[in-house]
Image (cartoon, rainbow, N blue to C red):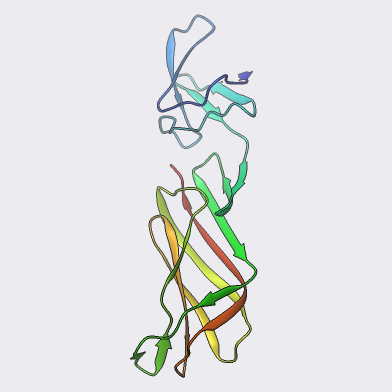
Length: 168
């Protein structure tokens, strides 16, 4: 087993040549070649030889930017979240069934998924009888509000968005 701090983040598959074994491929804890960004420069990487490959383990990565917070795990799972204290949605369009929908507001994920599995929206609603909703897209949440009567604008207090999936 070896521990080291990389001087550069990997841009794809990687190999190691230590201890006289020759060039050996690095794999993730799930057994796939390293995806870009798996090996980081801000923490130590621990590699363990399993007889065929070196298995690289990584610490949980927590990051944030203007689009929210993300958490990446060594096994490929990733969670993202975003919150905003006040969101105002525009005028309702024509009725869909018995409900009126606002135009969409899109919020970009703070880190990109390989595959999004699940997620949702929670909102503290300032207006009476207004419900928030969302769809998970490849790179973002599409959000809206709906209510039983037409409206010129709808305000939602704190909006909390979350999604989970895989980053590699």
